[in-house]
Image (cartoon, rainbow, N blue to C red):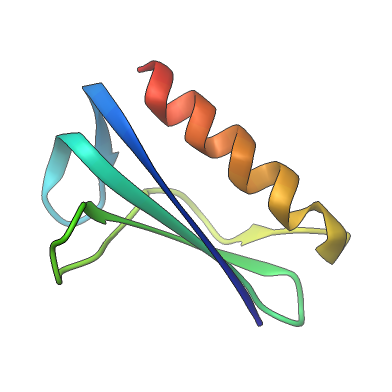
Length: 80
């Protein structure tokens, strides 16, 4: 299992499954499990509670793509 984490500013907000839209200084954590399942969590920088990004099960066909997918998600969420 590999975890990657990045901080970014979401001025237009990011939708979460639990609380709706959050914005500001956020941290994205992606976890890639051995079977390729990708977990997407987000929080306010420094906060203890993590939220999930909406959607169905995310899966990578090649575990080596985890870093690239993580960076793309950060850029897209940052863009708004």
